[in-house]
Length: 592
Image (cartoon, rainbow, N blue to C red; front, side, top):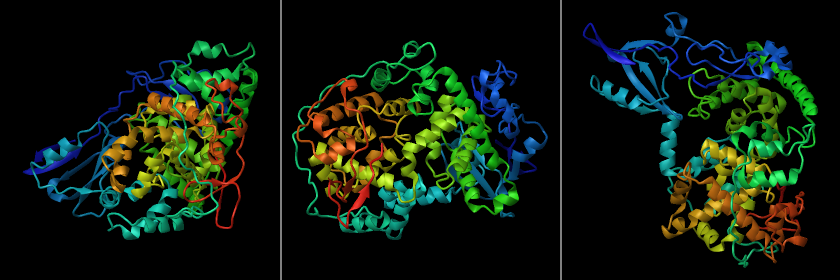
Protein backbone atom coordinates (compact mmCIF):
# COMPACT_ATOMS: atom_id res chain seq x y z
CA UNK A 1 0.00 0.00 0.00
CA UNK A 2 1.50 3.32 -0.95
CA UNK A 3 0.75 6.88 -2.07
CA UNK A 4 2.17 8.17 -5.34
CA UNK A 5 2.13 11.53 -7.07
CA UNK A 6 0.65 11.28 -10.54
CA UNK A 7 -0.16 14.28 -12.73
CA UNK A 8 -0.16 16.56 -9.66
CA UNK A 9 -2.65 14.27 -7.91
CA UNK A 10 -2.02 12.07 -4.89
CA UNK A 11 -2.98 8.51 -5.71
CA UNK A 12 -3.52 5.76 -3.15
CA UNK A 13 -2.60 2.48 -4.78
CA UNK A 14 -2.57 -1.11 -3.51
CA UNK A 15 -1.31 -4.16 -5.35
CA UNK A 16 -1.26 -7.49 -3.47
CA UNK A 17 2.15 -9.06 -3.02
CA UNK A 18 2.72 -12.71 -3.68
CA UNK A 19 1.71 -14.79 -0.66
CA UNK A 20 3.01 -12.69 2.21
CA UNK A 21 2.19 -15.36 4.81
CA UNK A 22 5.19 -17.43 5.86
CA UNK A 23 4.12 -21.01 5.08
CA UNK A 24 6.86 -22.80 7.02
CA UNK A 25 5.46 -25.64 9.09
CA UNK A 26 1.95 -24.58 8.15
CA UNK A 27 -0.48 -27.43 8.56
CA UNK A 28 -2.81 -27.66 5.60
CA UNK A 29 -5.62 -29.98 4.72
CA UNK A 30 -5.14 -32.71 2.16
CA UNK A 31 -7.30 -32.90 -0.90
CA UNK A 32 -9.77 -35.22 0.78
CA UNK A 33 -10.44 -32.32 3.18
CA UNK A 34 -9.77 -34.50 6.18
CA UNK A 35 -6.03 -35.15 6.24
CA UNK A 36 -3.09 -32.93 7.09
CA UNK A 37 0.20 -32.35 5.38
CA UNK A 38 2.95 -29.72 5.39
CA UNK A 39 3.76 -27.17 2.75
CA UNK A 40 7.33 -26.89 1.60
CA UNK A 41 8.42 -23.38 2.52
CA UNK A 42 10.09 -22.65 -0.80
CA UNK A 43 8.17 -24.48 -3.49
CA UNK A 44 4.72 -24.51 -1.98
CA UNK A 45 4.42 -28.16 -2.97
CA UNK A 46 3.94 -31.16 -0.74
CA UNK A 47 7.19 -31.75 1.10
CA UNK A 48 6.21 -34.98 2.80
CA UNK A 49 4.10 -37.95 1.95
CA UNK A 50 0.52 -37.56 3.03
CA UNK A 51 -0.45 -38.98 6.32
CA UNK A 52 -1.72 -42.54 6.42
CA UNK A 53 -5.31 -41.36 6.59
CA UNK A 54 -5.03 -39.65 3.22
CA UNK A 55 -4.38 -42.97 1.53
CA UNK A 56 -7.20 -44.53 3.46
CA UNK A 57 -10.90 -44.96 3.20
CA UNK A 58 -11.45 -41.21 3.43
CA UNK A 59 -10.21 -40.52 -0.10
CA UNK A 60 -13.42 -42.05 -1.46
CA UNK A 61 -15.09 -38.81 -0.45
CA UNK A 62 -13.06 -36.57 -2.78
CA UNK A 63 -16.34 -35.48 -4.38
CA UNK A 64 -16.94 -33.15 -1.43
CA UNK A 65 -13.44 -31.77 -1.43
CA UNK A 66 -13.29 -28.42 0.30
CA UNK A 67 -9.59 -27.56 0.30
CA UNK A 68 -7.25 -27.26 -2.65
CA UNK A 69 -3.56 -28.09 -2.59
CA UNK A 70 -2.66 -25.12 -4.77
CA UNK A 71 -1.64 -21.90 -3.13
CA UNK A 72 -3.10 -18.80 -4.72
CA UNK A 73 -0.26 -16.87 -6.26
CA UNK A 74 -0.65 -13.27 -7.22
CA UNK A 75 -0.11 -12.36 -10.86
CA UNK A 76 -1.28 -9.61 -13.11
CA UNK A 77 -4.39 -11.61 -13.89
CA UNK A 78 -7.70 -12.06 -12.15
CA UNK A 79 -6.29 -12.52 -8.68
CA UNK A 80 -4.62 -9.13 -8.67
CA UNK A 81 -7.49 -7.29 -10.30
CA UNK A 82 -9.85 -8.70 -7.72
CA UNK A 83 -8.04 -7.17 -4.76
CA UNK A 84 -6.00 -4.30 -6.26
CA UNK A 85 -7.28 -0.77 -5.90
CA UNK A 86 -6.23 2.76 -6.82
CA UNK A 87 -7.94 6.08 -6.30
CA UNK A 88 -7.17 9.76 -5.97
CA UNK A 89 -7.34 11.17 -2.44
CA UNK A 90 -9.51 13.95 -3.84
CA UNK A 91 -12.18 11.31 -4.55
CA UNK A 92 -12.12 9.94 -1.00
CA UNK A 93 -15.29 10.54 1.01
CA UNK A 94 -14.72 8.42 4.14
CA UNK A 95 -12.52 5.79 5.76
CA UNK A 96 -14.05 3.19 8.07
CA UNK A 97 -11.75 1.61 10.64
CA UNK A 98 -12.77 -1.69 12.20
CA UNK A 99 -11.11 -3.94 14.75
CA UNK A 100 -11.73 -7.70 14.72
CA UNK A 101 -8.51 -9.08 16.17
CA UNK A 102 -6.69 -7.00 13.57
CA UNK A 103 -7.41 -3.68 11.88
CA UNK A 104 -8.98 -3.30 8.48
CA UNK A 105 -9.90 -0.18 6.55
CA UNK A 106 -12.72 0.40 4.09
CA UNK A 107 -12.60 3.34 1.70
CA UNK A 108 -15.69 4.96 0.22
CA UNK A 109 -15.45 7.35 -2.74
CA UNK A 110 -17.57 10.40 -3.43
CA UNK A 111 -18.97 9.33 -6.78
CA UNK A 112 -20.10 5.82 -5.87
CA UNK A 113 -22.20 4.29 -3.14
CA UNK A 114 -20.22 1.05 -3.08
CA UNK A 115 -17.04 0.45 -1.08
CA UNK A 116 -13.66 -0.60 -2.36
CA UNK A 117 -12.21 -3.94 -1.18
CA UNK A 118 -11.32 -3.79 2.51
CA UNK A 119 -7.62 -3.64 3.39
CA UNK A 120 -6.68 -6.00 6.22
CA UNK A 121 -3.61 -5.20 8.34
CA UNK A 122 -2.99 -8.60 9.98
CA UNK A 123 0.59 -7.68 10.93
CA UNK A 124 -0.12 -4.08 11.97
CA UNK A 125 0.76 -0.95 10.05
CA UNK A 126 -2.67 0.64 9.75
CA UNK A 127 -1.69 3.54 12.02
CA UNK A 128 1.44 4.27 9.98
CA UNK A 129 -0.59 4.25 6.79
CA UNK A 130 -3.16 6.68 8.18
CA UNK A 131 -0.42 8.94 9.54
CA UNK A 132 1.13 9.09 6.07
CA UNK A 133 -2.25 9.81 4.53
CA UNK A 134 -2.69 12.77 6.88
CA UNK A 135 0.28 14.41 5.19
CA UNK A 136 -1.89 15.00 2.15
CA UNK A 137 -5.43 15.38 3.50
CA UNK A 138 -7.30 15.97 6.73
CA UNK A 139 -8.59 12.59 7.83
CA UNK A 140 -11.63 12.36 10.09
CA UNK A 141 -11.86 8.72 11.04
CA UNK A 142 -15.19 6.97 11.48
CA UNK A 143 -15.31 3.78 13.47
CA UNK A 144 -17.44 1.07 11.94
CA UNK A 145 -21.06 1.09 13.06
CA UNK A 146 -20.71 -2.03 15.22
CA UNK A 147 -17.50 -0.86 16.86
CA UNK A 148 -18.73 2.68 17.38
CA UNK A 149 -22.02 1.58 18.92
CA UNK A 150 -20.26 -0.92 21.14
CA UNK A 151 -17.86 1.71 22.50
CA UNK A 152 -20.66 4.21 23.12
CA UNK A 153 -22.78 1.61 24.87
CA UNK A 154 -19.84 0.30 26.86
CA UNK A 155 -19.08 3.75 28.21
CA UNK A 156 -22.71 4.22 29.21
CA UNK A 157 -23.39 0.70 30.43
CA UNK A 158 -20.47 -1.73 30.22
CA UNK A 159 -22.29 -4.37 32.24
CA UNK A 160 -24.97 -5.03 29.66
CA UNK A 161 -22.87 -4.25 26.58
CA UNK A 162 -20.29 -6.90 27.41
CA UNK A 163 -23.00 -9.52 27.42
CA UNK A 164 -24.14 -8.59 23.94
CA UNK A 165 -21.40 -9.88 21.68
CA UNK A 166 -20.99 -13.61 22.19
CA UNK A 167 -24.20 -15.48 21.45
CA UNK A 168 -27.76 -14.93 20.39
CA UNK A 169 -28.79 -15.98 23.87
CA UNK A 170 -27.13 -12.90 25.37
CA UNK A 171 -29.10 -10.68 23.01
CA UNK A 172 -32.19 -11.26 25.11
CA UNK A 173 -30.49 -9.51 28.01
CA UNK A 174 -29.04 -6.85 25.74
CA UNK A 175 -32.37 -6.02 24.09
CA UNK A 176 -34.16 -5.75 27.39
CA UNK A 177 -31.74 -3.14 28.70
CA UNK A 178 -31.23 -1.22 25.48
CA UNK A 179 -34.16 1.08 26.10
CA UNK A 180 -32.53 2.69 29.15
CA UNK A 181 -28.96 3.10 27.97
CA UNK A 182 -28.78 6.69 29.15
CA UNK A 183 -28.72 5.57 32.77
CA UNK A 184 -25.28 5.10 34.23
CA UNK A 185 -26.46 2.66 36.86
CA UNK A 186 -29.87 1.17 37.65
CA UNK A 187 -31.62 0.64 40.95
CA UNK A 188 -31.39 -3.00 42.11
CA UNK A 189 -35.13 -3.50 41.89
CA UNK A 190 -35.15 -2.37 38.24
CA UNK A 191 -32.31 -4.71 37.35
CA UNK A 192 -34.18 -7.53 39.06
CA UNK A 193 -37.43 -6.79 37.24
CA UNK A 194 -35.83 -6.66 33.81
CA UNK A 195 -33.71 -9.77 34.30
CA UNK A 196 -36.77 -11.58 35.59
CA UNK A 197 -38.66 -10.72 32.42
CA UNK A 198 -35.77 -11.58 30.12
CA UNK A 199 -34.88 -14.91 31.72
CA UNK A 200 -38.10 -16.81 32.41
CA UNK A 201 -38.03 -18.81 35.63
CA UNK A 202 -35.06 -17.06 37.19
CA UNK A 203 -37.36 -14.98 39.41
CA UNK A 204 -34.79 -12.61 40.84
CA UNK A 205 -36.01 -11.21 44.15
CA UNK A 206 -34.52 -8.71 46.54
CA UNK A 207 -35.52 -10.51 49.72
CA UNK A 208 -35.26 -14.01 51.05
CA UNK A 209 -38.26 -16.22 50.37
CA UNK A 210 -39.62 -18.40 53.20
CA UNK A 211 -39.17 -22.13 52.91
CA UNK A 212 -35.85 -22.08 51.08
CA UNK A 213 -32.66 -23.57 52.45
CA UNK A 214 -30.71 -20.50 53.53
CA UNK A 215 -26.96 -20.91 53.57
CA UNK A 216 -25.50 -19.08 56.54
CA UNK A 217 -21.90 -18.95 57.67
CA UNK A 218 -20.46 -22.45 57.77
CA UNK A 219 -17.04 -23.31 59.08
CA UNK A 220 -15.35 -24.94 56.10
CA UNK A 221 -12.09 -25.41 57.94
CA UNK A 222 -8.65 -24.78 56.51
CA UNK A 223 -8.26 -25.07 52.76
CA UNK A 224 -5.83 -27.94 52.07
CA UNK A 225 -2.70 -27.31 50.06
CA UNK A 226 -2.50 -29.27 46.83
CA UNK A 227 0.19 -29.64 44.20
CA UNK A 228 0.20 -30.04 40.46
CA UNK A 229 2.29 -32.52 38.48
CA UNK A 230 4.06 -32.68 35.14
CA UNK A 231 1.95 -33.44 32.05
CA UNK A 232 1.46 -37.09 31.13
CA UNK A 233 4.17 -38.11 28.64
CA UNK A 234 3.71 -40.18 25.49
CA UNK A 235 5.69 -42.99 27.10
CA UNK A 236 3.42 -43.08 30.15
CA UNK A 237 0.34 -42.97 27.92
CA UNK A 238 1.52 -46.03 25.98
CA UNK A 239 2.02 -47.91 29.24
CA UNK A 240 -1.74 -47.74 29.79
CA UNK A 241 -2.47 -49.77 26.66
CA UNK A 242 -2.62 -53.54 26.41
CA UNK A 243 -1.31 -55.43 23.32
CA UNK A 244 -4.67 -55.02 21.55
CA UNK A 245 -4.82 -51.31 22.19
CA UNK A 246 -7.30 -51.24 25.08
CA UNK A 247 -6.72 -48.59 27.71
CA UNK A 248 -6.00 -50.02 31.15
CA UNK A 249 -6.15 -48.65 34.69
CA UNK A 250 -8.40 -45.87 33.44
CA UNK A 251 -9.19 -44.48 36.89
CA UNK A 252 -5.52 -43.88 37.63
CA UNK A 253 -4.96 -42.52 34.13
CA UNK A 254 -7.68 -39.89 34.61
CA UNK A 255 -6.16 -38.92 37.95
CA UNK A 256 -2.78 -38.34 36.33
CA UNK A 257 -4.36 -36.26 33.55
CA UNK A 258 -6.32 -34.21 36.08
CA UNK A 259 -3.21 -33.46 38.12
CA UNK A 260 -0.96 -32.47 35.23
CA UNK A 261 -2.71 -32.54 31.88
CA UNK A 262 -1.16 -34.04 28.76
CA UNK A 263 1.94 -33.36 26.73
CA UNK A 264 0.90 -32.12 23.31
CA UNK A 265 2.05 -35.27 21.50
CA UNK A 266 -0.58 -37.30 23.37
CA UNK A 267 -3.53 -34.96 22.97
CA UNK A 268 -4.57 -36.06 19.49
CA UNK A 269 -5.30 -39.57 20.73
CA UNK A 270 -6.19 -38.91 24.38
CA UNK A 271 -8.81 -36.25 23.69
CA UNK A 272 -10.82 -38.75 21.65
CA UNK A 273 -11.14 -40.89 24.78
CA UNK A 274 -11.73 -37.99 27.17
CA UNK A 275 -14.52 -36.63 24.99
CA UNK A 276 -16.14 -40.02 24.48
CA UNK A 277 -15.49 -40.37 20.76
CA UNK A 278 -13.44 -43.50 21.47
CA UNK A 279 -14.66 -45.95 24.14
CA UNK A 280 -11.97 -46.55 26.76
CA UNK A 281 -12.35 -50.32 26.46
CA UNK A 282 -12.13 -50.43 22.63
CA UNK A 283 -9.31 -52.20 20.80
CA UNK A 284 -7.21 -50.57 18.09
CA UNK A 285 -9.08 -52.50 15.38
CA UNK A 286 -12.43 -51.49 16.83
CA UNK A 287 -11.40 -47.86 16.76
CA UNK A 288 -10.32 -48.09 13.13
CA UNK A 289 -13.68 -49.61 12.26
CA UNK A 290 -15.44 -46.85 14.21
CA UNK A 291 -13.49 -44.17 12.35
CA UNK A 292 -14.48 -45.66 8.99
CA UNK A 293 -18.13 -45.63 9.98
CA UNK A 294 -17.91 -42.12 11.37
CA UNK A 295 -16.15 -40.93 8.22
CA UNK A 296 -19.05 -42.21 6.14
CA UNK A 297 -21.57 -40.57 8.42
CA UNK A 298 -19.73 -37.27 8.47
CA UNK A 299 -19.32 -36.88 4.73
CA UNK A 300 -22.94 -37.86 4.06
CA UNK A 301 -23.98 -34.97 6.28
CA UNK A 302 -21.43 -32.69 4.66
CA UNK A 303 -22.73 -33.60 1.22
CA UNK A 304 -26.20 -32.45 2.29
CA UNK A 305 -25.24 -28.81 2.62
CA UNK A 306 -22.60 -28.79 -0.12
CA UNK A 307 -25.12 -30.06 -2.65
CA UNK A 308 -27.68 -27.35 -1.85
CA UNK A 309 -28.02 -25.08 -4.86
CA UNK A 310 -28.18 -21.30 -4.62
CA UNK A 311 -31.82 -21.44 -5.60
CA UNK A 312 -32.58 -23.91 -2.81
CA UNK A 313 -30.70 -21.83 -0.27
CA UNK A 314 -32.70 -18.75 -1.21
CA UNK A 315 -35.77 -20.65 0.00
CA UNK A 316 -34.10 -21.85 3.21
CA UNK A 317 -33.63 -18.80 5.40
CA UNK A 318 -32.41 -20.82 8.38
CA UNK A 319 -29.55 -22.44 6.44
CA UNK A 320 -28.72 -19.11 4.85
CA UNK A 321 -28.52 -17.45 8.25
CA UNK A 322 -26.36 -20.25 9.64
CA UNK A 323 -23.93 -19.95 6.74
CA UNK A 324 -23.72 -16.17 7.02
CA UNK A 325 -23.05 -16.29 10.75
CA UNK A 326 -20.46 -19.06 10.40
CA UNK A 327 -18.57 -17.23 7.67
CA UNK A 328 -18.49 -14.10 9.79
CA UNK A 329 -17.30 -15.88 12.95
CA UNK A 330 -14.74 -18.14 11.29
CA UNK A 331 -13.07 -15.12 9.76
CA UNK A 332 -12.22 -13.77 13.21
CA UNK A 333 -11.57 -16.94 15.23
CA UNK A 334 -8.02 -17.32 16.60
CA UNK A 335 -6.48 -15.50 13.65
CA UNK A 336 -3.26 -14.89 15.58
CA UNK A 337 -2.77 -18.66 15.93
CA UNK A 338 -0.45 -20.10 13.29
CA UNK A 339 -3.01 -22.75 12.41
CA UNK A 340 -5.58 -20.11 11.40
CA UNK A 341 -3.61 -17.00 10.43
CA UNK A 342 -3.33 -15.47 6.99
CA UNK A 343 -5.65 -15.26 4.03
CA UNK A 344 -7.26 -18.37 2.49
CA UNK A 345 -5.93 -20.52 5.32
CA UNK A 346 -7.01 -24.17 4.95
CA UNK A 347 -7.60 -24.34 8.69
CA UNK A 348 -10.34 -21.72 8.31
CA UNK A 349 -11.94 -23.74 5.52
CA UNK A 350 -12.09 -26.81 7.75
CA UNK A 351 -13.44 -24.73 10.63
CA UNK A 352 -16.20 -23.49 8.32
CA UNK A 353 -17.00 -26.92 6.91
CA UNK A 354 -17.21 -28.62 10.29
CA UNK A 355 -19.56 -25.96 11.65
CA UNK A 356 -21.76 -26.15 8.55
CA UNK A 357 -21.89 -29.93 8.88
CA UNK A 358 -22.81 -29.60 12.54
CA UNK A 359 -25.84 -27.61 11.39
CA UNK A 360 -26.90 -30.71 9.47
CA UNK A 361 -26.22 -32.86 12.53
CA UNK A 362 -28.32 -30.66 14.83
CA UNK A 363 -30.38 -28.40 12.60
CA UNK A 364 -32.69 -27.20 15.39
CA UNK A 365 -29.77 -25.71 17.32
CA UNK A 366 -27.74 -24.97 14.20
CA UNK A 367 -24.96 -22.48 14.72
CA UNK A 368 -24.79 -19.94 17.54
CA UNK A 369 -22.01 -17.41 18.03
CA UNK A 370 -19.40 -18.86 20.35
CA UNK A 371 -19.37 -22.36 18.88
CA UNK A 372 -16.39 -21.53 16.70
CA UNK A 373 -14.45 -20.80 19.90
CA UNK A 374 -15.23 -24.31 21.17
CA UNK A 375 -14.29 -26.01 17.91
CA UNK A 376 -11.05 -24.14 17.20
CA UNK A 377 -8.83 -25.84 19.85
CA UNK A 378 -10.25 -29.25 18.97
CA UNK A 379 -9.46 -28.88 15.26
CA UNK A 380 -6.02 -27.53 16.14
CA UNK A 381 -5.27 -30.67 18.17
CA UNK A 382 -6.94 -33.24 15.88
CA UNK A 383 -5.55 -31.88 12.58
CA UNK A 384 -8.27 -33.97 10.95
CA UNK A 385 -11.71 -32.88 9.82
CA UNK A 386 -13.63 -36.04 10.70
CA UNK A 387 -12.06 -36.62 14.10
CA UNK A 388 -12.44 -32.93 15.00
CA UNK A 389 -16.13 -33.02 14.07
CA UNK A 390 -16.99 -35.99 16.25
CA UNK A 391 -14.97 -34.68 19.18
CA UNK A 392 -16.79 -31.37 18.77
CA UNK A 393 -20.12 -33.22 18.77
CA UNK A 394 -19.17 -34.85 22.07
CA UNK A 395 -18.13 -31.50 23.56
CA UNK A 396 -21.38 -29.91 22.39
CA UNK A 397 -23.33 -32.61 24.20
CA UNK A 398 -21.92 -31.08 27.39
CA UNK A 399 -22.32 -27.48 26.22
CA UNK A 400 -25.61 -27.72 24.31
CA UNK A 401 -27.74 -26.02 26.97
CA UNK A 402 -25.46 -22.97 26.93
CA UNK A 403 -26.62 -22.12 23.43
CA UNK A 404 -30.33 -22.82 23.59
CA UNK A 405 -32.66 -19.85 23.28
CA UNK A 406 -34.21 -20.41 26.70
CA UNK A 407 -30.73 -20.18 28.27
CA UNK A 408 -31.51 -22.95 30.72
CA UNK A 409 -27.90 -24.07 30.95
CA UNK A 410 -26.66 -20.55 31.64
CA UNK A 411 -29.39 -19.84 34.18
CA UNK A 412 -28.63 -23.03 36.04
CA UNK A 413 -24.90 -22.45 36.15
CA UNK A 414 -25.21 -18.85 37.34
CA UNK A 415 -27.55 -19.95 40.13
CA UNK A 416 -25.18 -22.73 41.10
CA UNK A 417 -22.17 -20.42 41.02
CA UNK A 418 -23.93 -17.90 43.23
CA UNK A 419 -24.77 -20.67 45.70
CA UNK A 420 -21.17 -21.88 45.83
CA UNK A 421 -19.72 -18.38 46.22
CA UNK A 422 -22.11 -17.59 49.05
CA UNK A 423 -20.98 -20.70 50.88
CA UNK A 424 -17.28 -20.01 50.33
CA UNK A 425 -17.24 -16.31 51.16
CA UNK A 426 -20.46 -14.78 52.42
CA UNK A 427 -18.82 -11.39 53.01
CA UNK A 428 -17.65 -11.17 49.40
CA UNK A 429 -21.00 -12.36 48.09
CA UNK A 430 -22.77 -9.72 50.20
CA UNK A 431 -20.41 -7.07 48.85
CA UNK A 432 -21.21 -8.06 45.27
CA UNK A 433 -24.90 -8.03 46.14
CA UNK A 434 -24.56 -4.51 47.55
CA UNK A 435 -23.02 -3.43 44.22
CA UNK A 436 -25.87 -4.95 42.16
CA UNK A 437 -23.48 -7.70 41.03
CA UNK A 438 -24.81 -10.61 43.05
CA UNK A 439 -26.21 -12.20 39.91
CA UNK A 440 -22.61 -12.78 38.74
CA UNK A 441 -23.39 -11.95 35.13
CA UNK A 442 -19.81 -10.77 34.72
CA UNK A 443 -18.99 -14.52 34.70
CA UNK A 444 -21.32 -15.10 31.74
CA UNK A 445 -18.57 -15.35 29.14
CA UNK A 446 -16.49 -17.66 31.34
CA UNK A 447 -19.33 -20.15 31.48
CA UNK A 448 -20.62 -19.73 27.94
CA UNK A 449 -17.42 -20.81 26.18
CA UNK A 450 -15.48 -22.36 29.08
CA UNK A 451 -12.88 -19.60 29.59
CA UNK A 452 -11.86 -19.72 25.92
CA UNK A 453 -11.34 -15.95 25.73
CA UNK A 454 -9.89 -15.56 29.19
CA UNK A 455 -6.81 -17.78 28.77
CA UNK A 456 -4.00 -18.17 26.28
CA UNK A 457 -4.59 -20.82 23.62
CA UNK A 458 -2.23 -23.33 25.25
CA UNK A 459 -3.78 -22.76 28.67
CA UNK A 460 -7.22 -23.45 27.22
CA UNK A 461 -5.97 -26.83 26.00
CA UNK A 462 -4.69 -27.61 29.49
CA UNK A 463 -7.87 -26.50 31.26
CA UNK A 464 -10.23 -28.38 28.98
CA UNK A 465 -8.42 -31.72 29.17
CA UNK A 466 -8.32 -31.43 32.97
CA UNK A 467 -12.06 -30.72 33.14
CA UNK A 468 -12.89 -33.56 30.73
CA UNK A 469 -11.59 -36.10 33.25
CA UNK A 470 -14.70 -35.46 35.35
CA UNK A 471 -12.49 -35.04 38.43
CA UNK A 472 -12.45 -34.16 41.24
CA UNK A 473 -16.19 -33.48 41.26
CA UNK A 474 -19.14 -32.62 39.11
CA UNK A 475 -19.25 -29.06 37.73
CA UNK A 476 -15.58 -28.46 38.45
CA UNK A 477 -15.65 -25.49 36.08
CA UNK A 478 -17.78 -23.64 38.65
CA UNK A 479 -15.00 -24.08 41.20
CA UNK A 480 -12.58 -22.68 38.61
CA UNK A 481 -14.79 -19.57 38.57
CA UNK A 482 -14.72 -19.48 42.37
CA UNK A 483 -10.93 -19.79 42.36
CA UNK A 484 -10.57 -16.77 40.04
CA UNK A 485 -13.01 -14.70 42.07
CA UNK A 486 -11.25 -15.70 45.27
CA UNK A 487 -7.99 -14.32 43.87
CA UNK A 488 -9.63 -11.02 42.89
CA UNK A 489 -11.94 -10.38 45.83
CA UNK A 490 -9.39 -8.47 47.90
CA UNK A 491 -8.71 -5.91 45.19
CA UNK A 492 -12.41 -5.56 44.36
CA UNK A 493 -13.37 -4.94 47.98
CA UNK A 494 -10.38 -2.84 49.03
CA UNK A 495 -10.77 -0.57 46.02
CA UNK A 496 -14.51 -0.38 46.73
CA UNK A 497 -15.35 -1.25 43.13
CA UNK A 498 -18.87 -0.50 42.05
CA UNK A 499 -21.09 -2.09 39.44
CA UNK A 500 -19.17 -0.90 36.36
CA UNK A 501 -15.71 -1.16 37.92
CA UNK A 502 -16.28 -4.82 38.80
CA UNK A 503 -17.21 -5.65 35.24
CA UNK A 504 -14.27 -3.71 33.84
CA UNK A 505 -11.87 -5.42 36.24
CA UNK A 506 -13.14 -8.91 35.41
CA UNK A 507 -12.95 -8.23 31.67
CA UNK A 508 -9.36 -7.03 32.00
CA UNK A 509 -8.30 -10.34 33.55
CA UNK A 510 -8.33 -11.85 30.06
CA UNK A 511 -4.91 -13.33 29.15
CA UNK A 512 -3.53 -12.45 32.60
CA UNK A 513 -4.60 -15.59 34.46
CA UNK A 514 -2.21 -18.35 35.60
CA UNK A 515 -3.92 -21.63 34.75
CA UNK A 516 -1.82 -23.83 37.05
CA UNK A 517 -2.43 -21.52 39.99
CA UNK A 518 -6.16 -21.47 39.24
CA UNK A 519 -6.39 -25.27 38.98
CA UNK A 520 -4.45 -25.67 42.20
CA UNK A 521 -6.78 -23.33 44.06
CA UNK A 522 -9.93 -24.84 42.52
CA UNK A 523 -8.88 -28.33 43.61
CA UNK A 524 -8.16 -27.02 47.12
CA UNK A 525 -11.64 -25.45 47.26
CA UNK A 526 -13.17 -28.77 46.21
CA UNK A 527 -11.38 -30.66 48.98
CA UNK A 528 -12.24 -27.93 51.49
CA UNK A 529 -15.96 -28.16 50.68
CA UNK A 530 -15.90 -31.95 50.63
CA UNK A 531 -14.44 -32.09 54.13
CA UNK A 532 -17.29 -30.03 55.58
CA UNK A 533 -19.37 -32.15 57.96
CA UNK A 534 -22.51 -30.01 57.70
CA UNK A 535 -22.48 -29.47 53.97
CA UNK A 536 -25.84 -28.17 52.71
CA UNK A 537 -27.63 -30.59 50.45
CA UNK A 538 -27.81 -27.94 47.72
CA UNK A 539 -24.01 -27.78 47.54
CA UNK A 540 -23.69 -31.55 47.61
CA UNK A 541 -26.12 -31.75 44.69
CA UNK A 542 -24.24 -29.16 42.62
CA UNK A 543 -20.87 -30.88 43.05
CA UNK A 544 -22.24 -34.44 42.89
CA UNK A 545 -21.05 -35.43 46.36
CA UNK A 546 -22.58 -38.42 48.08
CA UNK A 547 -24.04 -36.96 51.28
CA UNK A 548 -23.30 -40.15 53.19
CA UNK A 549 -19.54 -39.67 52.77
CA UNK A 550 -19.42 -35.88 52.57
CA UNK A 551 -17.40 -35.75 55.75
CA UNK A 552 -14.42 -37.40 54.14
CA UNK A 553 -11.94 -35.61 51.95
CA UNK A 554 -9.79 -38.10 50.06
CA UNK A 555 -6.82 -36.62 48.28
CA UNK A 556 -6.64 -39.72 46.12
CA UNK A 557 -9.57 -39.47 43.76
CA UNK A 558 -9.45 -43.20 43.20
CA UNK A 559 -11.24 -43.57 46.53
CA UNK A 560 -13.77 -40.85 45.81
CA UNK A 561 -17.37 -41.90 45.18
CA UNK A 562 -18.49 -42.40 41.62
CA UNK A 563 -20.23 -39.39 40.18
CA UNK A 564 -23.88 -39.81 39.39
CA UNK A 565 -26.68 -37.45 38.42
CA UNK A 566 -27.83 -35.41 41.40
CA UNK A 567 -31.43 -35.49 42.62
CA UNK A 568 -33.74 -32.97 41.03
CA UNK A 569 -34.02 -29.78 42.99
CA UNK A 570 -35.76 -26.51 42.66
CA UNK A 571 -33.94 -23.21 42.54
CA UNK A 572 -34.92 -19.82 43.72
CA UNK A 573 -33.57 -16.58 42.40
CA UNK A 574 -31.09 -15.94 45.18
CA UNK A 575 -29.11 -19.00 44.26
CA UNK A 576 -30.31 -21.33 47.00
CA UNK A 577 -31.80 -24.76 46.43
CA UNK A 578 -34.56 -26.59 48.16
CA UNK A 579 -35.96 -30.10 48.14
CA UNK A 580 -39.63 -29.29 47.79
CA UNK A 581 -41.24 -27.57 44.84
CA UNK A 582 -43.76 -24.79 44.72
CA UNK A 583 -45.77 -23.14 42.05
CA UNK A 584 -43.38 -20.19 41.77
CA UNK A 585 -40.10 -22.08 41.66
CA UNK A 586 -38.25 -23.09 38.52
CA UNK A 587 -36.98 -26.57 37.75
CA UNK A 588 -33.22 -26.89 37.50
CA UNK A 589 -31.44 -29.69 35.68
CA UNK A 590 -27.84 -29.71 36.80
CA UNK A 591 -25.39 -30.06 33.95
CA UNK A 592 -21.77 -31.11 33.97
